[in-house]
Image (tube, rainbow over all chains, first blue to last red; front, side, top):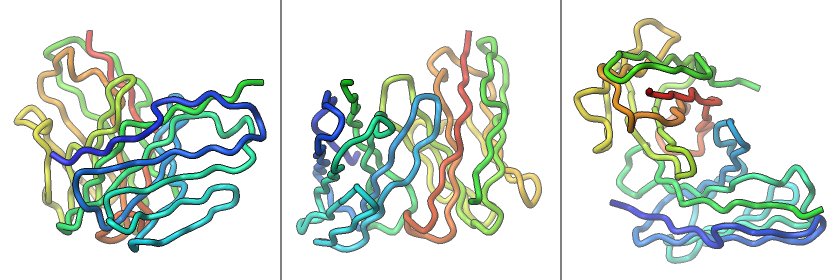
Length: 112
Length: 115
């Protein structure tokens, strides 16, 4: 099946630092999504990307859809305590179905 | 902002029992989904549902699982005879149109514990 690998698995940063994480796939996706999950909650959509090469921002978050359609990155600038959580990338394949394939997640911890 | 609502938030059941997890998708959405997340792992697709029938299901979604939209608002996941390995968070999601990103929204989940 399709696999999405996220890196890094976990990050420990200080408040105010910038964060960068990425997602790579062995398969092509035609939509990339980035979600944040807080403990005991469902994934919350942060950014959606629909075209190869697309660069999209949402406040302090910026994400890009890779040219090959097999990768994406998410950057968070000037991190704040509420950024703590697990970030998942998710892809929708080119075959027209509606299921999301989720990445393995990046756990972000902010050191006081 | 419209929400996907799931009940109960936590369900404990004995192995072999049937459970029904309930979801109320966003009212104008047409595609409905169930996903599962075993503790500490990634979110996994179970099934998608459109026009009153299953449009796709994963290998996880075996004969023990079924979904139903019994009325115009609820969407349920039934596990007929629960196993210990069914313990997980179950998330319902809905979307407005084909192609994720069109308001593909997840509920807060039901934590199922099989003992």
